[in-house]
Length: 83
Picture 1 (cartoon, helix red, strand yellow):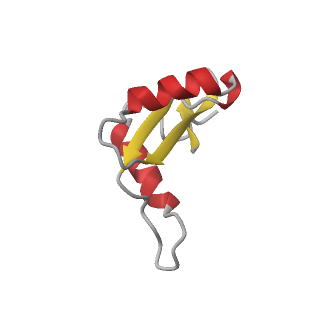
Picture 2 (cartoon, rainbow, N blue to C red):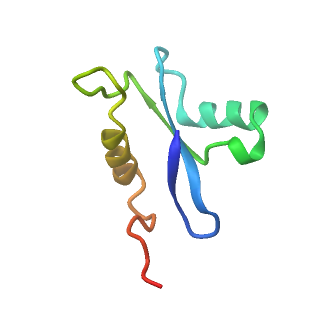
């Protein structure tokens, strides 16, 4: 899980989870989080993946997940605003 931009809060969470069961949808993941996680820890968005992208040394490829988040949520203000 990492942060994506949010107008009001600055950042909110997006969770990428690996699932074996295709019936486990993003809505079910968020419903589980609502029942089992504190409000401030709960992700606003979720994405189920068959497997996590990995780097050549086996670590999670966070850059690929970040690019996937941008693709899934194109309406968010991804670029920092000038003040």
